[in-house]
Length: 395
Image (cartoon, rainbow, N blue to C red; front, top):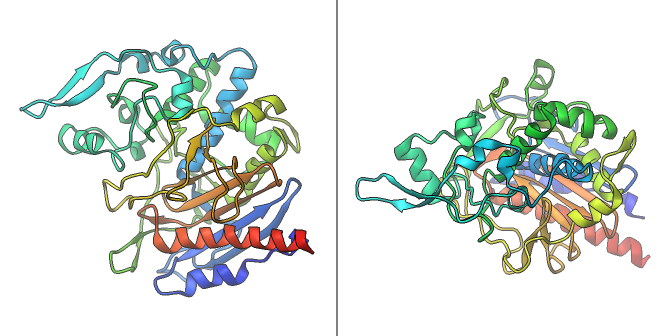
């Protein structure tokens, strides 16, 4: 019955409302295949090219779970100890100090961390790292000390101070970029190559890459800035096509269809159509809350052009796994307790419901994050799916 889920009207609604999204691609999968694929609107508001389900997106932080998967593979092989100092594998992380504030002259006050950053800290976002668009401290380092933005894909962009001692609390940031450096240190290969041979090939993923090429560029959805008045302005935004480092936290381009293949692997206990990516026991372990009672909070929009204040399911307890958000209770959408999900900065959102065997992805290209139209559209999309599932089950 669930195969009859159709969200075409919902997608049409978000691209024709006022305010609207320029274009959207959304899909839902069961354990075997996509049960819904939809596209609506335009690739760019200043061009009449229709959005298609085959279009490519900058997928931003939806990259993170793929980097975590590569790390988990190395754990399985005994090559990565999550509790060992990450500097055993990525030596530069061992040079970073904790920032305690700024002195009267505006210089950072630095001290040695009380304990080393481990790869477990990195996967859980407890390493002490932040992002300039969610952290006043990092924003000040960017503004006053020339700390480069992560979108430069430079090694310098992740050579930042820690905001607190590793393990003390959850704060979202460049942790997974460092996890990517750990993977590179162990394998001796660039992250994109590791992904291709160890994750993408077994999953049948063809078009996902850190290095934007002309083929993908021809079907790239355009980036847009949402104005305070609701208007949309197209931006000529691209991540570097020859990145100094492959940013495991946000650097991938790909199609929604390709991401669905990754979601299916998590629904199928680590198995892909062309081979196993993770062992079933690794998937079961990784999908649990590993934060204990720390819990995750709102992401404060420090740079308004990049993010609004943003939070999934305000008021609901949320934890972190390796490496997804976990909702501790059933969500208002119908997503069950213990499900997995996360998002990407340009208003891309996904969920993975291992209990029921479904997952979905919603892709737009709009800044800032937490876009009222796109985020609400996504919540409606997920809610309508669970409503259809409930009525199918009742029937």
